[in-house]
Image 1: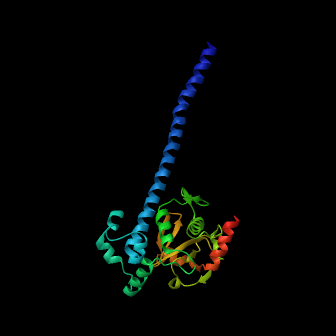
Image 2: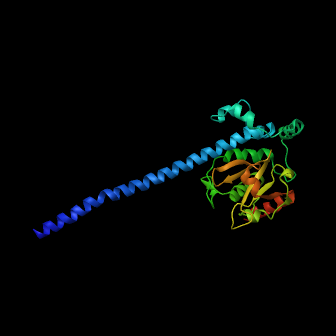
Image 3: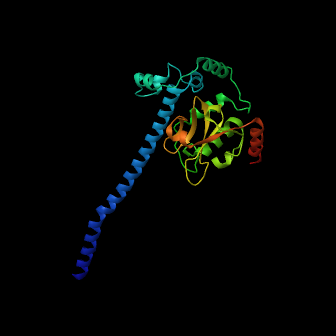
Length: 252
């Protein structure tokens, strides 16, 4: 009898403890699902914002490089309000400058460094929306310096150093945002642990492509309060820089 009672009590304890265990496991699964959903939403939002910036703020030449046109933009974007765009697009654009840029892009211009504008834009558009992961260097998750490293490896066969701080040592300095040119690296002070802690590539029209910790690979504006306050400067890689970096790539 005592043996039966002991077994009954043990079984009862296990029975009443079981729902909490199951609930804990279910909660863990729900938590993982919520995090996955949140990441997917941020990825989608990053791509949407990037496409919106290109469609509303970029010159026609940059839109052309990105594969956007008046016929395709409305199909790509959701909920775009033409009246709001008309009211808030307050950055004047010089028509002659746009015409000159457009003709240069249509002719397939290659930068003095040997970097192809078309190759850069094709790469950026292919990667838009890829998720951010600190220390990552793959399509499943990548950080800002790895994104630049991958871009230059694919588009120029050149191997940039791994960190933004190290990448800042290459090229000729461009101190003012107004002097930036397509293909220049742009650097920011966004974290306390390092003066140079974020990097992207300048596309023109005050826009740059980068891997954002919030939106993943996206396109942002240098005129935004966040990046304007934290902008350090740019670096323009020369042909000699890319040749040197290509040798590093071959050595690896």
